[in-house]
Image (cartoon, rainbow over all chains, first blue to last red; front, side, top):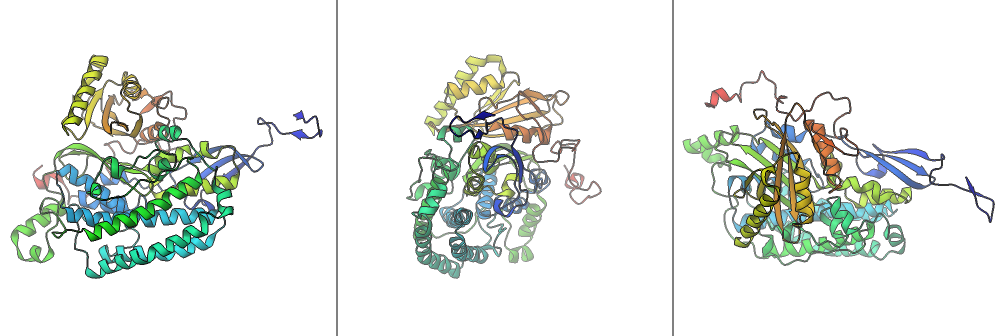
Length: 403
Length: 167
């Protein structure tokens, strides 16, 4: 112990034996999911952190090796369950790429509408939870109603709200109903006002800014080294967005900007997500306005289930139905990697096919599994309460983390 | 598209001249250029790609198992060059009797957990890794579950038996 010459008070050094070990999690209400961090604390300051993950590992990659192609979509629901439709559609795009199927503009635009709606739902949860961790519960409860409205739209389209299994490989099982379009238009009309109010509540709120600016920051260089993607990377100033860089599902048709931050801290991550929601609204409006006419699914019998009335009445359709359900279609041999811009980063699908009825190997590139390992570096030296707010601003979803 | 192809051919040429025999195979007809690299040279190849050819981002790293091959366990790397927007796939294979290969954590800190995941599911040990232990499964698990010798479904089930479908 060194003595402070001025006051004669002992100053604790970093190698002090007075560290305490604190178990944050696995189930703690402040971590919003099952994350365990064994923290070494010096008073209120975090000295080190050891992460334990895998509490809700469900072996999706192993299960996928025993399932035919269309049976894997429900597994992807359970990765990032805040934006299941992006996972579903990303997986469907991957299988279409393997089969060499291209979809029509109408299918692409329908998918874009759904993906952007779920991006809004995802960002809305993340940003409002940052508010909750800073002590502002009101915004969270207020925007929850809008998330419900988005889930109502999903329910109209596919019958489910959270784990959606939306769409099919090759398009959709049915067209958008006129009432669905009405619901989306109502949402587009009402949501900007709510989002603006939510922004007014937090964006220039002195308390919120003091709690988030300079907290949990990371440089662009370190973020790239740690494999950051999505809003977390863009908050550091790197404008990497899969929608623009490797455009899929006709994203190149739409006019939108990629918001970026500068500091890579919690406040920047909040701002980037906030700006992305406005951009998503723009994209949805453009997609609805320019939605072309056409079929809602491709005409490729190898991957699309025939209509029920045909299955019951026609031999050919019955044969194809059986083949698709049992996985007895000719699958191309090969390997592909494709990725989509998920709610929290680049969601990749690496498929190896040996021509069998199931994938030989299916690997999910789960963005938050990859960037969550930077968490100890981001919270070191900060306060415990800052560690909590950093975790929620990173949008780590336990389901995706543990696969 | 043509421009991309030229870039890929240039990369193939550069890597082949730099590493010669260490490049076991290459394929540019797939969705991205794919190289199979000798496991001893893999880190040197990744370092060359990162420092000379600008592949600054490790997108993905995962394991794969081909039980009928001599070198049956594989690791697949996906690299991404942000400036040129080129993606590249590297594969390397090791024997199941001695599944060790060097770690990429010194080049890409992000490979830390991905290598642990590969170890967890395939049993490939990465030499020089700072914390080589299981990540998603429990520590006392005594097998590597993603290897092909562990079938998932009940072996008494016959409704999906390949014999009934002429395979």
